[in-house]
Amino acid sequence: VPVVIRRINTGWLEASAGLSFFGEGRHPELPDGRLRGKPWRDDIQRADGSLGSGTMIPVPVWYVETPTARVLVDTGLPPVEELLAFQTRYGLVQAVEAAPEDDLTTQLAEAGIQAEDIDIVVHTHLHLDHVGGNRFFPNATFLVHEAELAWALCPPPYAAYYYRDFSHHTQDVLDRVTFVGNEHQVTPELRMVWTGGHSPGHCIVLVEAGFGTVALAGDAAYSYENLLYEWPQGPVIDFAAIRRGFQVLKSADLILVNHDDRVREFFPSGLISGQDLTEPVQEYMRRVRTTPSRSLEGWSDPWPPAAAEYGSA
Ligand SMILES: [Zn+2]
Image 1: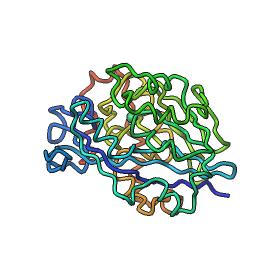
Image 2: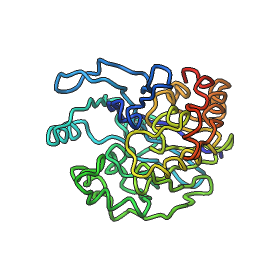
Image 3: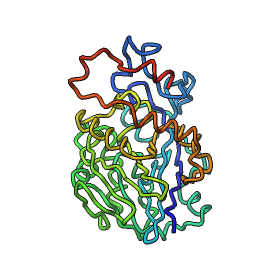
Image 4: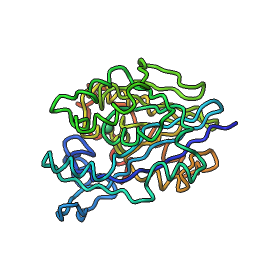
């Protein structure tokens, strides 16, 4: 029985330059002097009528079916009304979009999967855009790295993307949370690997999919540019861990990042299978995976090392 991997998008969030790339992706030796999220827009419509500049990034979850378990990796966006009310309280403005067809349980049902049938939810981490659908899965065990839970339940005031206002999503399922350590074999085909970096207990998920090892990146890298340039996304709590996480991702045959719409272009049906892995996608993955690793000492070398060969990546 082959492993099934399905991408399900739960909505869209505005990502500013600084959210997509640490330091807003600026460097004079880069083409155009900066990295930008793709596709870049200056006309993002926000709820308060203002226009945002940046990228509307998808917020997907992953359904993985193995011979022994139906697994969901993260649970996506909270309800839009909850996000907008939170923004008002905190004085934030960020566009949020979720159409009725982005509803998680509806999309699962369309694929023949009932929420009650989900056995395991693997949490890459507990940021607000990864826990928003926890309440839908009454029979699931929730796997969370041991360093992550306190940040979700009782975040310090400065802990961006946790916030006490969203802790109820984790509280809702607390009696079914199981802690895991740095390496956890969920099923014979599916493994959680702690990377830290983006959050204290951040894990990626490696899936043995028959056609190769697939890395579900969580937020270890937001976009393929983060990997091509070895340039961290904005939210970082540990730079060295972020860079180690990039290398773990690059060890996989196929890297599926969350917040980059090219994954939808690569796999328009949402199903990630060997047949859908076209030659251009494989070629792109080779480029992402073979970007030279740069040790921290390497930053004194002429930089960027191979910007020309990345082209307009
Ligand atoms: Zn995150």
